[in-house]
Image 1: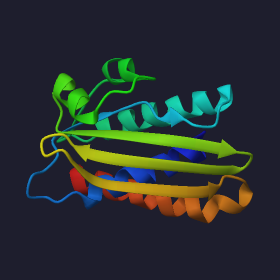
Image 2 (image 1 turned 60 degrees about the vertical axis):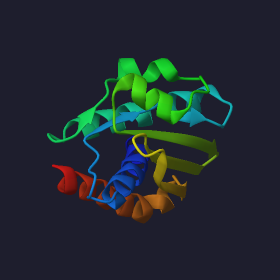
Image 3 (image 1 turned 90 degrees about the vertical axis):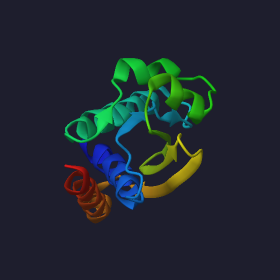
Image 4 (image 1 turned 180 degrees about the vertical axis):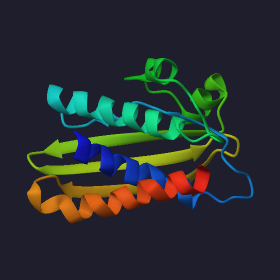
Length: 152
C-alpha cells in the first residue's frame, strides 16, 4: 500500500504543481478513486489512495481540503465535478481511477477548476508495482514532495 500511495501522491502533486498561479487553488476536494479492476482488493486500494491524498494535502497550511466524510458521499455516484465543487464549496475537484491487473497498476488523476469549468491537468501513470518498479516510485515521490514545497 505504501508504494502505491507514493504513486498517487506523485500524480496528485504533479497536477497541483502544474496549476497556473494567477488564480491559485485554495481549496480542493479529493473524490474516492474509481476502481475499474472489478475486485474487492482493488476497491480497498482505491479508497486508501484517495484517503492518503486527503491526509497529505491537508498538511499544507494554505490549502483547504474537504474531509473524507464529505468527499466520500459521492462514491459510486455519477455527479458533475462542478456540482460537487459547488456543493462542497471548493475551488477544485480531484478525481482518479485505478486499474490493477497482477503487478501492473494504472492510475489516472484529473484536476478540475470548478470556478472556470476547466480541466487543469490530467496525469496517467502505468507502473509495475513489483520489485522492479522501485525507481519509478522514487520519481513519483519526488513529484509529491514538489507539491508540498509549492503549497507548504
